[in-house]
Image (cartoon, rainbow over all chains, first blue to last red; front, side, top):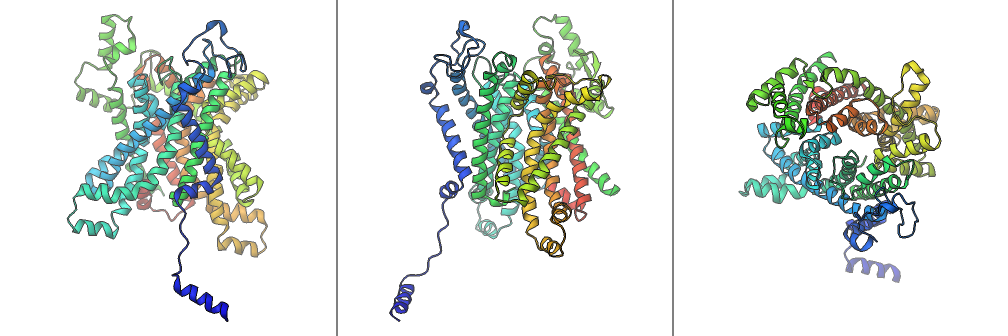
Length: 297
Length: 321
């Protein structure tokens, strides 16, 4: 009886609390694969940021007398390339190019794509038709082919790679944001905001945009992986960053020419791309499950 | 169905027109004089002037545009100055090779990816499921140009099983042709294969928990038929949704695959044209691939309607947007 009274008293004194929804970080950490993805991405980012301290040699320091040295040669953990440059140092500096292009191209694509998607979905009508027809047109090009075509015209260079991959990313973001805007703008709170006299700009950027962020972040994360592969592909075709700048794609391109003699160049550069992209994809998958489970495939 | 296809075709015309405009704008973005860029620094002033005249670059931009659209409507993609051949002829020569590569890659992707996805779904949370998912995750993250190089290293250079480059010829026998086809096809198939496995698994998991599947099992139907006939049929729709996107990726991936294996297809043609600064070929082939992609998407939409007859013209149009 006493126990019952105590229980009743405890129930009455404390209002029943609903279990707290775990935070985003905790959700991510519960997902082992996502946590592994975050770890890989973080390590790669740290390598890119601290490249001058991690790389034992300058990435462009040549020593032709010691060219095509095998991995494990003294002073060259992963061997040297055809110019005698240290492959490990070049891979470490290559991480910078990959991450800079990956993030910048996606920011570029996200900025313009979001802007176009917001305007298109919110205002509708002829403007929507014009914007979305243009996006459909851009979508008709295979992603890498559009980037290749743009690079052919723009010419080699880091900025041009970012612009080319960025432009190829715009239609994807525009479509996602437009779809979100179409559903959010029908919500009651938007009607209320409108009736209170809010300007279009305020409604778009203060009320609609925040509601589009979850799918935008998920799509953006996944797009970084795609942008890194695209940069490597462009460099592999000789259309990416200018030599002698170290990029994973250009190391792979050089390695392809010496495949029989020195397969280590092609092997390690490809592994670096694969590991980074895998890490970002694992993290992106986890982020999608945590933020926007409806997007799950 | 005929009416549906006709309406979808009409609906595609503005998209194709926009694609043509985009290609026109991009090729006019070349900094400086395109004719000088194409001929290189050694070219004489007369040669540059002649090429400018041939390409119509001396005309005002709007005249160039209407000339370009008019030529396209007549099926004239221009003449390559490096091959000294009409682009259409080059496309007719090369496109079948890309098609063979893409179709064989698609078949490999489907034959391995879909059963792998079904097995993973039916054995959910087993080692087999985790294995399939891990491999498919690695597959979607794979830089295929690296995979191609590695396949050449192990299967051509080290083991000598397959030729490293070229397409082979039917004159040398079907075996030789297939030997040349295997490595490029596997390279190109990797990402779609992984994507199909992931999509099949997730859509099968949704379907096999539905009541009608339980009913089929309760009726005593063999598990094989329950999965293959009843569940898979309804899990097919999401697979078709990604098919169009995968074909687009394959057309892009063909550029890289054909470069690695020196496969004489459209991708190789584009890369060679870039090396030779032959922008007319780049313009024509890129436009052609984009149009093919638009038509492939139409085909996928039609298949979608065949699999799911409830799809109406208006809903698919909305969906496409």
